[in-house]
Amino acid sequence: MDSIQLTGIRAEGTHGVLEDEHSNPQPFVVDVVMQVDTRLAASSDNITDTVDYGQIANRIVHIIEGEHVDLIETLAQRIANAILQSHAVQQVTVTVHKPQAPITVPFDDVSVTITRAQEIESGLLSGQTEPSIASRVSSLAHEQQNATLQSTQRSLSEHTTRMSHADHDMHTLHAEHTERAEYDNDGNAEPSMHHAVIALGGNIGNVEQTLRSAIVSIDSIPGNQISGISPLYRTQPWGMPDGTPEFYNAVVQLDTMLDARTLLHTLQTIEATFGRRRDKHWSNRTLDLDIIDFDHTTSSDPMLSLPHPRAWQRAFVLAPWLALDPDAQLVGAHSGAVAELLPNTPDAHAVTLVSQSWILGDSAHID
Image 1 (cartoon, one colour):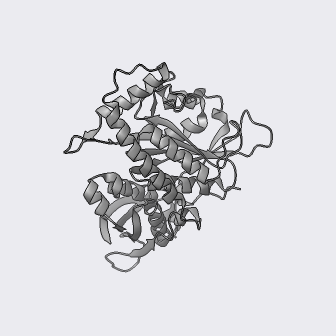
Image 2: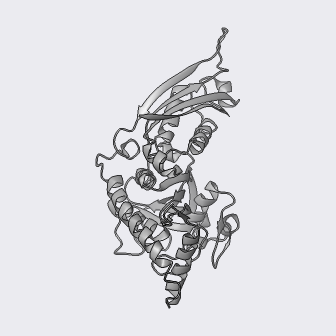
């Protein structure tokens, strides 16, 4: 197995057993060795087929600077958990150095080294025994991606076709993507990188675990790479019957080689895998995945309106999005800075922060 190494990641944190270590930051240094099969990335020369080590470095710093732990063993475990959220990493060795540990004799360094591996496909995070979620969705994505490539090439000769207003919007969106596409040596269109914001939510079952598993499933699709994960929020249901369970919501940023419609179909397949039913519009749900933004484009296509037509009035979307990206901007008819739109949402009072580090399994259990 190939390996990717990051050494000397430095940040300050308040980790340690002694009381003054809880409030006075001290330096920590982290080295990681990730076991990754790099053959696909070497062939495609595409970052989504390997590990984004810049993203891994940011995760490490976030954990060091985050919530206090007494032991560097615990700190190492949290870092390993965060790295193993990248589907491409099969095994990781994490070394945490504490060079200013409160030791009363001369010393050069103190460190803890642990090695952790993916237990089963997505199983470390999801706790599921079925290895089918990522593989089923991955198979669908491959089929849809091939169909998308063929459609992209055909669309180059269809500019003169008369279309309805809605179809025209989607054609414009598709044309924009085609213009940004790269071409191989034979002149065939290759899919370009797109950037999406996806909202996640649910109110049935162990929602926190479902959302974590859904993120792993999204990240495991060929051509996808999660680039950011928001804190977790609790939302009081509004416009629904009394006694409706609370919702839990988050937002992720995604780099993807899939086009907007293929991404939509893929997300719907993930929803269905987790038991999502669409027979009622306003109802309880195990998992809800919505594309909020895709390349800052607009479309009024009834199958996929972009941006999400109600995002501007939903605090449970805007609050986690703002926490993830303080400079986030919503385009379209209700465009504006998310920071300015959020206070004016009707449910702004109903959204509360649950956990900054929920993705690592650190938040309280959600019934």
